[in-house]
Each structure stands twice: as C-alpha cells, then as structure tokens.
Amino acid sequence: MSGAFWCAVVRDTVEVTGRDAAAFLHSQLAQDVASMRDGESRPSLLLDPSGRTVAVLRVVRDGEERFVLDTEPGFGVPTAERLARFKIRIAADLRVGTSAFVAVRRATGVSVPGALPAWWCDGSAVDLRGDEPPAGIPQGTQAMLEHQRIASAWPLFGTDVEAGAIPAETGLVPHAVSFTKGCYPGQELVERMDSRGAGAPHRVVAARCGVPPSPGDVVVVDGAVRGRWTSVSVLDGECVAFARVARGTEIAGAIVPPSRG
Figure 1: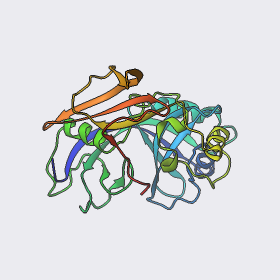
Figure 2 (figure 1 turned 180 degrees about the horizontal axis):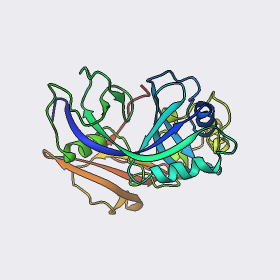
Figure 3 (figure 1 turned 90 degrees about the vertical axis):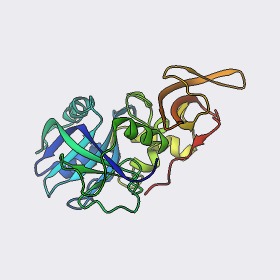
Figure 4 (figure 1 turned 120 degrees about the vertical axis):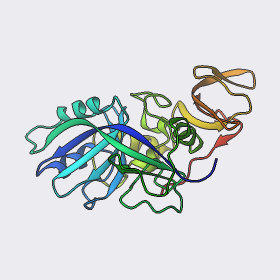
C-alpha cells in the first residue's frame, strides 16, 4: 500500500462553551488547555479521580469560549458525565453529539488545508471536520483505515485499551499528558508512576505477524501465555495486530510508535 487516502468517519463530540470553559477544561484534562490558541488542537486523556482512563480525546479550541472534544464512538456520554460531576459553580455548558470527519491517512508530505492532527500528530494522519473530501486524494476503505491504524501503532480506546485502564497502560502518556500544567483529577497516579519509572502491569503493543491471529487469541511467548490479541488486520498479504500483554513481554515484529510530534 502506498499513497494518501481518505475515509469518512463519525466521532462522538462534547462541546464546552462559556466564559469558564478554558479554565474548567484545564483543571480537568491531563493536557495543557489554557495555553491553546484559537484553532489549535491537542491530544489528551480524561481520567477519573483514581487515575483510571475515561476517554482518549482530541481538544480543539474554537474561539475564546468554545472548545470541542472529540473521541471514539460510545465515549462522548461518559466524557460529558465525568466532566459534569466537577462542574460546580462553573460558567460552562456541555453538549454531547456526533460529528462527521474525513480521515486522511498516509498524509506525510501531503497538503491538506484546515486539517487537524490525528493519532500521533506526526503528519501521517490528519482529519478534516465535515464530510467534504480533500481534492486530489483518492477514497480508501474502512479496511484500509483500520490496517493503517494498527500499522501506525495507534491503539483503539475501548478495544486495544480497556476503558478504565491506568494511563501508563495506554502508551499515550508522553503524547497526551502535560507534566507542567498543574493539578487535574488522576494526576497523582500519572506523576507517581512517571517519577518512579514504573511500568504498567500490562501494556498494548502492535506487531507485524507472519501467521494471522484472531482477536481474543492468547499471546504465547516461550511457551507461556502472556496476553491476548485485541485487533487484527490482514490487507494485501500483510498482517498487523494489537495485543495487550503482561509487563516485560517482548513480541517479535513489534511496531515502534513514532516519537511525539
């Protein structure tokens, strides 16, 4: 496979508006929201007070008093419910919905005006808001999109990463957490594990596989069961798959995620 392609996707959204929107989200998300400029987007985690992951989000600032959080289907309502529990004497309104996006993948070196960085924010994946496809880029299939996701080592929240996982298990802490922004719910667990260099009891890893597994199959290393495969894609003779494995497990063909963009 080569060359950029696009696919239509729908994501859950939570719109946060009001004069306290920036300060409220800054106090609740793991990402630095207060310093965001109009039109800027950043990845973030939303955690509960115990440090468990509620959602993996993209935060977009649309003006002085409006932000849009987009997340995987099925996690918009939990996101809004979690935020609403802490919205006490806050001048901000929450509205849950869905929004259409055009996902452009294998986009490195391709100009896509108005696009939002996606996945690892390294330029290879971008999203356009709305349903208008980009000019000059061919349409792909959902199978191509899924294959590219796994080949890019981007875990799917709710599938590869379980809802309620500790942040260190997601592999997204360096990408979606600010260590300079100040307090937010769940910060203690994130900071403690980072300062100690502690790994999570489980982690997710993507790999190229010679023999395709099926989702739910066990991962066996040196004769021992070390985890389970969570998502699998076979396309044009190439198999890529995600697994959730125990700490210290090394899988042949592992795909290394890009460094933070």
